[in-house]
Amino acid sequence: MAPFDLDELLTLVQTIAIIAALFVTLYFSQRQVRAFSVDLESRVLNDIDEKFHHLAETFIASPTMVRTIYQGEGREDPATPVEYYVMSFCAHVFHMRQRRLITDNEWAGWRAWMKNAFRFGSIGTDWRKKQMEIWFDPQFRKFVERELEPEATAPRPAE
Image (cartoon, rainbow, N blue to C red; front, side, top):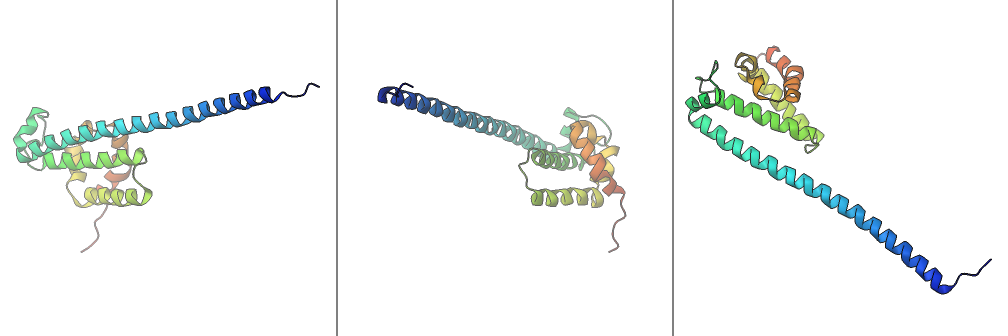
């Protein structure tokens, strides 16, 4: 058996250290790229949300402007833009929950808020009457049909 030369041993240790450093660099660069993509996605979503907010403000200030995107039944009602804005807000909260950006406790509070809006407000009856569902994605529509619409028909507690 040939004895190890000190130079060969140092070269082997150096090679292993370089390979380990490369793996560590690769690991942290992947984490950084993931964090960057989440940050970029968040900025894009915030930008879209801000633009939608300005559009909703326009429709609330001047309900007749709704006809620019919708000429169906109920557009003359001044509450329609507000109802759509509230539903868009609910959809936003729902999607933030799907992305795991809202904790269980926060979600329980927001879900209760949405259920109460459907139960005690006009949104529950107007969701179908004004065909609000056509403006929202299928996952949110299923959530509304499964969890919120039953609240609109639930009996209200006696006051």
